[in-house]
View 1 (cartoon, rainbow, N blue to C red):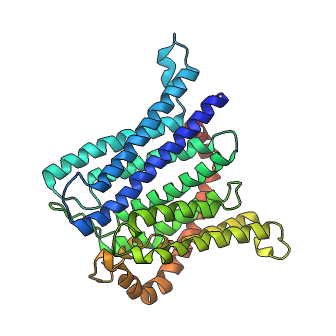
View 2 (cartoon, rainbow, N blue to C red):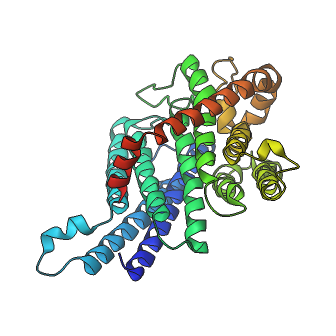
View 3 (spheres, rainbow, N blue to C red):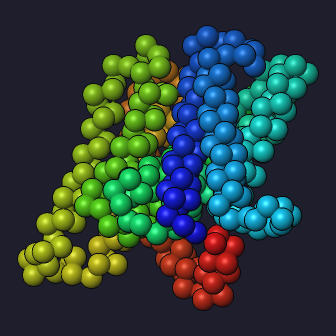
Length: 368
């Protein structure tokens, strides 16, 4: 792959990640919108932003496919074009197709079944398409040969968006927001409790364990800042109920920033901090530390996962009260210890899977 094509594809992957960011941000805004406006229509501002993101991802993907074919396929061999398209781009294309189809499906669902809850077939398709697209964008960016600043920043942004999508996927099966006009798909409170106790912390720890392999001093800060920016715009300042919490919510950046500063300082002072002399041990500690704070990173959705189990009959816009009621009886004594164990187990399982040569070799063949 020549340098010009590689550079073009890097921009393609970046634009795809921005498109997916618009989608996942608008999806969060859509939940707030339904709570504030209570409108049962497909054509809403959040949906407009969401499908603008789909359009951006789709246009960037088509451009990437054209770049790949023009640079790699002779005119006399048009049928070889498919094999010249990088596999990450194929994965993104598949994700875009799923997203486009989910839009039509969602419109049909609204027409025939009215308002749908958070967990519905079209919404599940949409987030699956987003997940495929951002994984493709992350892999494509990671495989880019030149380690320039734009490539590194793009990769960290992809990690931040992937983090948000993974946790949003968990929310679909844990938040009690899925009682639609015709179908009640709300999860069992016990199932929501178990999934909420384990998966967010495990996913967060695995992701930040991987992030720390990037050669950039403030890598955890950039990844967290990506999430904080999306969450702030889509959820915190998009309504009058949470906008006053913005300064407090922005304090979340202190956690990854502090860990990055500790990492930088201990890199050259291992004798003073023997606990960090083992780089892998340090990565595990930092990853688990961030995972313990997912409850504030993902506020207000994080606390709403558990309200049904504890019989708290409050709406989303009363999430501060929900947090206060759960803090001493659940978050500190139960959630944080279980999250610590879940995060550690997630990293161990991830390392085990990564250690199988057959699995990693197969993955390299697939993504190339």
